[in-house]
Length: 154
Image 1 (cartoon, rainbow, N blue to C red):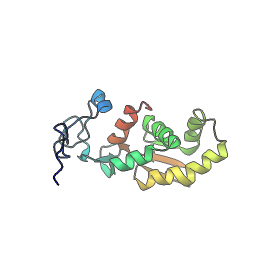
Image 2: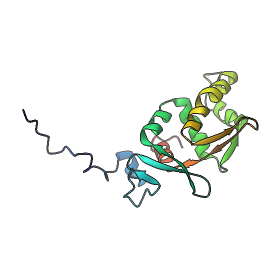
Image 3: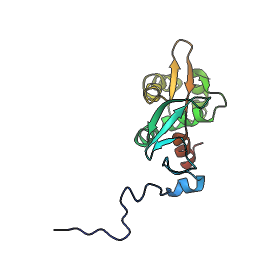
Image 4: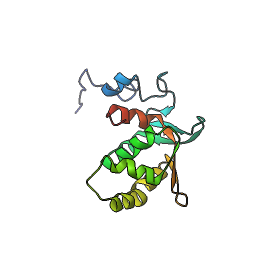
């Protein structure tokens, strides 16, 4: 039995350069062949760069969505993405988070940040967390920034 596809169905190959609706407003396409979004290596992978533009890793679209699936982590990433410098002290991050979230006390937020959220960001190579000086160095990922902008958190 042969199943025919509707005329509107596109294969993955045919849809590589399609702009997603919310991204269209930003002029972003999730593909390396687009001149508007150069940091991407493939349609689902993007470079993570330091302040000098040197690649320190790469992030995949699935990782970005998994990272942003948690509301508190979205706020953390939004704060990190909005800082002028590429680093922030952990206590400053906690103050910024506390101003936007009253649902947990400071100790719970600090513990969740230390044991859950920062390690996940480190695993994805988006940050380096120096536990001794309690500073967080944030690396830029254009894909992550674009997704944040698309969901209006930045």
